[in-house]
Length: 469
Image 1 (cartoon, one colour):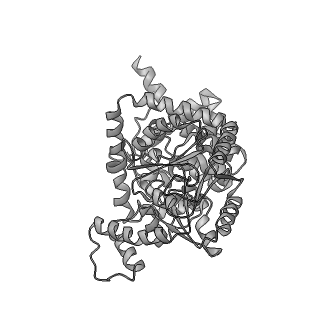
Image 2 (cartoon, rainbow, N blue to C red):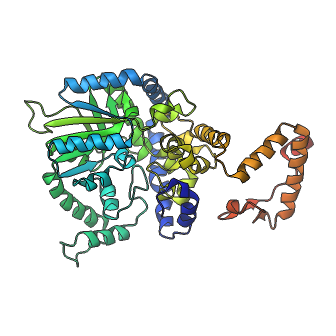
Image 3 (cartoon, helix red, strand yellow):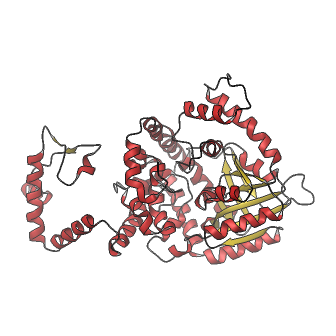
């Protein structure tokens, strides 16, 4: 599959025909969707918690300049260093310089989608530094030379049989006749391999779910403990994250953690919550000698003051992805981008350019489910419409769509003409129907590629409404 966002349509068509992908995507509802529903029901006033989370993230986004300066000062007070990066290239160079300064040759990594966003791994390899992903899903797709297909479950698209094939191909030093039929045997094998890599790493790189400005601390959640091993064992620890992750203090972090884990996996709290603040102190027995935080903009600050600003509230829980019918049909690789699904559709046009990621904003049924489950109430469909309007306004939309929208706008401004056109369309669509469904409409093949359409009543809504009076 092509990792190019411009190839979304071709990628989506290929994904729809992939028989191995269908069972994996079918687990979205039974795993993540069902888990979130149970967690929300058990919490009680989850809407109140969402309102609190929205207010915290709104405050952070509207006070980003102040909080980031405070965060930098707090990190420095603890003996750490904050480095700033305007874009992906600058971020890669900053991280490389830190690693070269300490003579690092191997670096373990854990829980950082931002390093996927800036394409860090191939850059480090090209400069003689070996990155080792330690999150189990990330480790699997690193062995397969694939990008993540899901934000919190990078190998979600794979079956355990495919993972076993990957391990047999990669771990050639082990007995080729060993059994890898059970999930537990896969986990045990990865754990044994990664343990040696943890102990030998020169540096560790993690992401951050949140940054506390007051405490100069970064917080990550994991269920495997790889975050702690990545940050504590090597002599140098680098946190790589986006500028929008900062909030005022740990009280705000505590509220957001309740939202994050319930919305992501349905857990009241993750197995591990790691608070990372500065290098090892004189009275501490473990921890890194060097602590750096690399804060990346990469297009985020351009969203401030725009109609897409609310997307900066995102806490990367994936709830919108887990409930999106488009993602549920084509998976994550079709997007050709680090961020997929509704959050990708809202964020990618800003970070990648509308000319590159316009398909993402159009890959939506506008059912609104993404906004309903978002823990911080981001109006994702509204932001997608914003990007669609920019695409149309800049003449980037396909000519057929542009002409169609122009024609529709002409009619919509003339009620009598609109009523006449809608009446004719309703009767024609009824004539096209067979046995209660429509299987095809001229020039709309894409709509009917994987589904049929119920036959309309033959009258418009207004005609039916008047008939009931």
